[in-house]
Length: 82
Image (cartoon, rainbow, N blue to C red; front, top):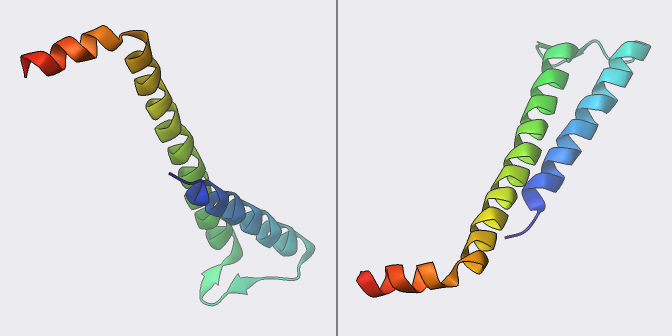
């Protein structure tokens, strides 16, 4: 499991911030047929979603791993019953 999704999310959030800064300075009014605010919000939301999803999945895997390490006998008993 790699962290590519999280880094892509950080990149999208940075791109949203740069677009917002350019719009604030008046350098950018629209991106194609879409207003700048809509594009910046969409990029930022997708970026945040990727980052938080990666962090939550990693936390879940860490909890499962810690539970397995805390009670290895329970796993053995469960495997023997099946």
